[in-house]
Image 1 (cartoon, rainbow, N blue to C red):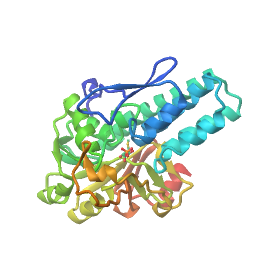
Image 2 (cartoon, rainbow, N blue to C red):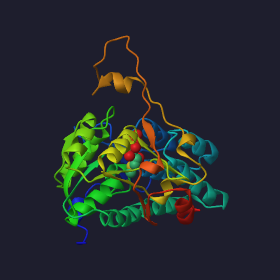
Image 3 (tube, protein in one colour):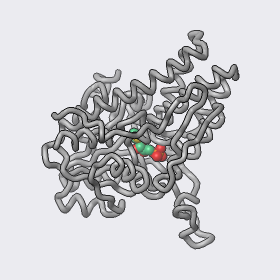
Length: 338
Ligand code: MRU
């Protein structure tokens, strides 16, 4: 594989600036690149809940900085930990990062030590993404086309990305010849965020309507669907952005391979199967309006689950920084993460 190309990785959306946290506001992209300054943990909680920062690893990292900032300010930490934990329910990276910070607090860490811990969480995530990029790209035959869903790139992580990291590495290595991104209704993470990252980093890609995915697979243009994860259960069942499940089903039908890319902080061995994963329901308003304008008749209602679960039997490979599990099941998961 050719060396990592730095021109394909220019975005860092979560930045600690000595005494406050700067977040690139993902609600406004691609129209506006505005940074939010969080000067207390409550502002970090709000930013996570309102999707100013989103993506499983990124919300864990932001939460860790929120805890460290609160410690530096002498704030009582138990309520801070509880508020951050309740900000979003599905992505286990949030709970993982808070548990890691809490272990350090219980062990007597002071504010400076907690800042170092938050920095370590962020640095480890970037390193994991680079490693997963190499491992995932190696699975892809030269000349392949890939379809991704949601946004799993630098915006969703410490940088580089999970599924999008594999795509960055695969493009740099000449293995990936065609990239397609689903728009990811209703919040449009694919259309607004993934396309922004890809254009900015010079990776040619085509946006598709979510409803075009099966037709694209049938055309033979894609050999892999590559997605991230918000929580991977002990049997390999994977919760990710709504629409991932139907992509996995369509991929199986068309003989397209299905890859999940996530750091080990997304693996939740305490959750037996996908059935036990709490699926976040968000406000119906996200579906009833587009870009702030009401598009559905007044009086209409909507159901807005924002994640679903792809069962392990539909997944060809789970790529983490620890290695690749092909055709995941409980035994293989236990062997790597037990
Ligand atoms: O609701 P979001 O935008 O936070 O959901 C994000 C996803 O579902 C991503 O695919 C997942 O977090 C992996 S990000 C590396």
